[in-house]
Length: 288
Ligand SMILES: [Zn+2]
Image (cartoon, rainbow, N blue to C red):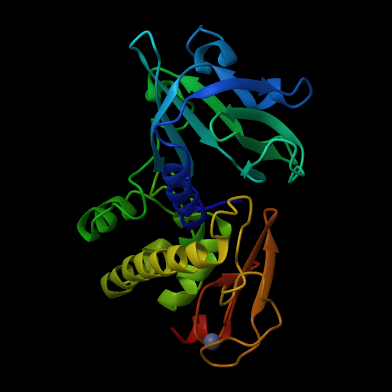
């Protein structure tokens, strides 16, 4: 799943490569297209976008938002939520597809295509004139890079349960998924299954700082490794996520893996003590 750092770099590339340019043509694949595309304007998806000029690209949580100008003088928004497996490919016409392409925006002079690729057809691409109409956007909390420490502390009090589960909930903060939650919690030295109510003020502040530093550092890494190849998802710099059995980069302990609720969680039991695993208190939790 692309998360905040990848989408942030994709946004930078799309701004540099495509803003100011006009969508000459829109191709919706007959198979996957109707599943991922949603027209909330009544204009028709392809009809609304053909001839529109890309004005800006922004990001809110795990949504990329394209601002478009139409010749008629009306503005439109394209909100893309790539979910589990959606990604973009910026390519020359005829270039090899990075996977099943459901949607293609054609740009001219030079000829270029922005393709939406999604192996699981789970992502959604909405065309709208009112962003609030896009499902889940209205309920979304502040972006993980925009929220202040004070707001973070305040909002966290409104959520119960395990801290990892809260961190990936968009109504709390938007932009963090399963992978970066593991990285952030490792950076903060907090066990992913610690209950929110068990966190001290100092630990909450540490989590906030780790969230920012992990995401900002990841953006720098992704920028270097991705370049303009926006279909990629560079993650070889991860400390713990998908590194189960490997050595913790901080202390050398073998990284633990827990699979629950169709999610893999990786963490270091030495650096991230406490918490409950499968209903059993770990020894360090009992000591606490
Ligand atoms: Zn460790």
